[in-house]
Length: 311
Image (cartoon, rainbow, N blue to C red):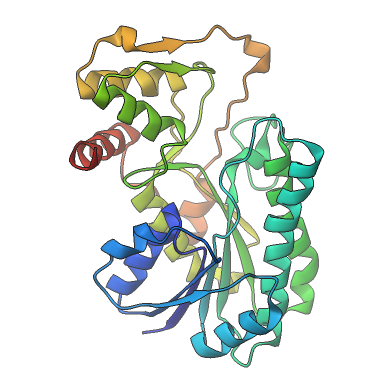
């Protein structure tokens, strides 16, 4: 049994990770910012300790680290969704929230009385942008959004800091994670909810491909990479290796829910504007021994079953 701290543990992926770590018998500490909606944690029937604080509050963060004595730290505090075309103020704000929050946490951990065995941070497949496919950990990224660029900057900052740290940091670059409990602001849960209640939907980029990863596989990947973080592999794709188009995803949802296909509209787009995100999972299998187990079609079916019970 080990002490685990999950920064951002009240979020979609974070809450599933909290449940996994509790089930495995770890002493789990969850860090959430003030004002965070904690509803996802209410369904976890095992004990964990909750810490509510701002990452910029150095003293509060230090008290949390002293209390947690964490041997494994998972950092999932970065926002998972930004405006498609944010203003300059929004773009700067995302850097402050995502990048500075990460660096403040690392600085506090470096001064903590107990040094972790592993520090795992979640990245995003969006960092690859228009880079050649399949996306490999060794290639140069070409992010198309400020959100992706901000998370990518975090990875490069970590690489520069690593020689000065007494603990290894690994970036687990996650594919498009979906599953039960995800916010309706995202495409898959939005399509499912609207189909279930008979509302029309629009898929604005139907021909774009995304590597899809069911949330249980994502959590299993994060959990397993923590066990090899001592190898100081700086970046690993946590990906399924299967990237359907959003048209294929929407068509399957329509079929599984059993609604009229005309309920979903597909926008006309130019192929030159599409950004396909298809990372290779080969390194994760070779280094971690991890591979996705839930095919995306089965994951969609499970998510629909969950949504039927909660709609």
